[in-house]
Image 1 (cartoon, one colour):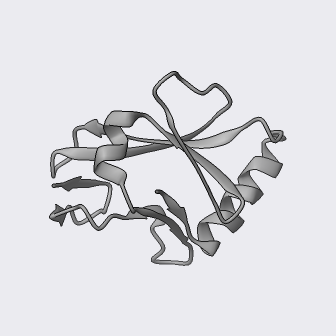
Image 2 (image 1 turned 180 degrees about the vertical axis):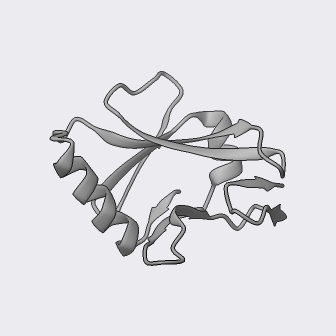
Length: 108
């Protein structure tokens, strides 16, 4: 399962409204090779599910990921923080053994 914190739900809803995205759109998250810790997160809006996608809905937000990425993201919570020292969107990933200082990459 992938989870969506209230803070992330609020920001996702704001962004979808600002971009005039309808209910066919969802949040696509994935993991790619790269970053200073070896793996990086990717997140975007999409409206086209693929054959092996894993589809979750939490806190009224639909989140989709490919099967390979799900192996790294299982039980991860998508969160958002703003403010002067805010990170923006970030992943609270219990599978990560270490993360880089910027929080954009991780290792398992």
